[in-house]
Image (cartoon, rainbow, N blue to C red):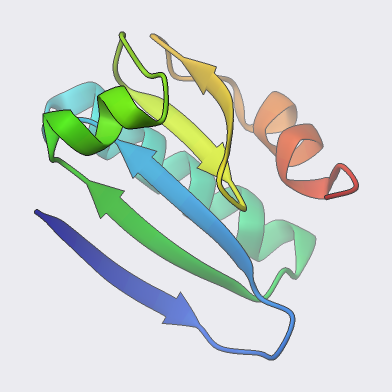
Length: 91
């Protein structure tokens, strides 16, 4: 199961929050939304809750964050400054 919301644009960054919806997963989604907004990024955010899909992406610890299909971190919620670096890095 997954849910998607977006701040639409042609070159939108795809941000995926991988996890079961626990408090840490929700916090990661909030921090990611805030960081993307502060960077002025056009983005599409998807919450991925399907364990099989997470395993296919190589995620063994949640919460995890993927940017444009590439897993950038797992098992923790980063500070906003670190997340801005991950989202602002060349894709």
